[in-house]
Structure formats: C-alpha cells, structure tokens
Length: 371
Image 1 (cartoon, rainbow, N blue to C red):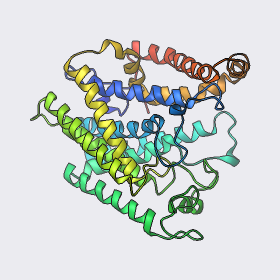
Image 2 (cartoon, rainbow, N blue to C red; image 1 turned 90 degrees about the vertical axis):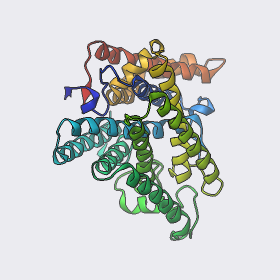
Image 3 (cartoon, helix red, strand yellow; image 1 turned 30 degrees about the vertical axis):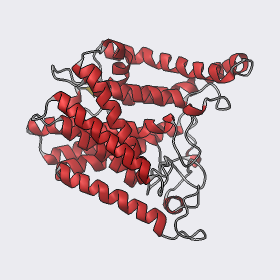
Image 4 (tube, one colour; image 1 turned 90 degrees about the horizontal axis):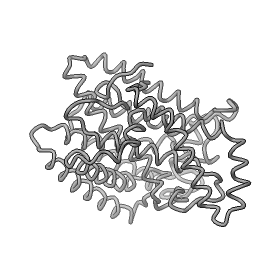
C-alpha cells in the first residue's frame, strides 16, 4: 500500500489548482449512500427508498452502484490521460491495471467471507468484484480505442444484451422471460458460477449482466473525455454534460417500456437511465463546487471520496465488529420504538459516523490509501 494523488490512483484526490473537487465529492457522497443503505439497524424496519426494488423498477438505492461505476469510468480518463502524458507506456499501464483489478477483486472476496470465513459458502460475484471487472475492461478500452469507438462499442453491447435477454431461449422457460431465476443471465450463472449465489438461483452481479455494467463505465469515460477537453470552457462542459445526461435519462426511460429498468439484470434501459442521472448529478455538483466555489459543505464527502475503497471496506466490516451492540440497540431502540424505521435509520447514520473517524484522520493527514 502507498499514498499518491489521483492522477495515479483511481480513488485518491489530486491536489491541483484546477482539480474538479466535484468528482471527489460525488464519489464520497456515493460511498456514504452505500454505507447508509447497507447497514440499517434491522432489515425488518427500513424505509422503502432505502431498499432496492424487488425486481422491475428502481428506487434511489438502485442509483448508488451505477453512480460509482460511472465515476470509475470518469476517473480512468482523468488518471490514465495524465499518466500517458507523463510518458508511461501502455505496457506498464496494462500491468498496473491488471494488478489493481486483481487486488480490488480479492478485497471483494475477503469482505464477502468476513467475519466467519466459511469457504463452503463462498460467493465469487460481488460489488467490488464487478467494479474490478468493469475497471479492467474500461481501462483497456481507454488504452486501445478512442471515444467514438468506445461510444459505438457501448451502444453495440447494450443492443446485443437486449437481444440476448429477449430472444435467446432458456431451457424450461423459453425466450423473453425476465423473471427472477428464469432468465438467460440466471441460467448462465447457474452453469458457470461456483460456490453460492446471492439469491440462490441467480446473482445480481453475475456473468452476463457484467457486460452492460461495463457500458455504465463507458458512459463515465465519455463524460471524463468531455471534461478533459481543453477546448471547451468549464461552464460549457457542465451544460453539455447535463443535456447529454437528460437525453440518456429520457432514452433509458423510454427503453424501459419494452426492456424494463431493472438493477438485478442491469438491463440496457437501466444503464441509460442511471447514467443520465449520474451525469446530471455530477453536472449539478460541478456547477456549485467548481464554478461557484461552494465547497465547505462537502468536507465529509471529500474525506470519504479520497479513500473510497477504504471507507467501503470499513463500512462493510464494522457492522460485524459491533454486532453485540447492534443486537442491544435493536432490542432497546428499534423494536421498542414508536417509529422503528427511524430508529433503524439512525443506526445506519451512527455506522457512517464511526466510519468517518478513521477516514477523517486519514484525510487530515493527507494519507490516501492506494490498492
């Protein structure tokens, strides 16, 4: 492990005069949201917007993961462009990319096993595992294609995924079935994913659905390409990003009429819908932070964003480490509360505050942990 700035690190902030703090804040807010929805006091008492959609459709919780992958795509462009400009060879960057993707994947496996380390129930797919695969694919695309080719590849992959999911027949169920455990993605996962799957017969981070997730990363790369264009003013970039985001959002919404917006399947409509929202969110943050200089309110977000993987890992392990306290809290404050959902939410906020302590210390000491 070492500390460097974001030009050489996917998740660490760059301290430069022209640094877009909005991207760091966007990353940090996304990590905070991840921890919030993953650590309620009790899963029996959770407000609906803080739960994933059961199947078709989306809730605010379903925006979080694609937002982070979008940010990964942006970061690839900003960091790899800088490293290439400094003379790094593509060969060296490929080795660096494979190493980083492998480490992120391994951390995901570790967090899935923690704290019991029951290898008989190991789950190979996962959040960090998908991030690692998307990062690897998008980084290689950046090194060996231009932005126009990336846009074409993304469009082809989304159309191909749509065609596969609705036209290829699945044994016992036929073609076009998109129900849980009965679709093409679930069938492929049941054949080729060893160990346990998140939902028994299917996994939301499975093999086939990783293909459109890569396109989510590509959309971030296209946004990063826009923001790295020195011929366009910052205000012009923000306007283009917002308009492009709105178009993607509208296209995804319309596509959802015939190919439902679905996070578990990471449908093509879901990619466009959430990429559009991500682009508009970043554009809004960039306007207030990078143009108007309103950054004081983003202090905690910048801290979380500067050590995103570390914050995510702490947030994943902490609930297990304080399980006895959680059991006491649920009995004393959740089950006996007049508003148990509010009490359950307060626990998640407390977990975020506990995570913030080491993250704040790292940030104040300018320590940015690199994987």
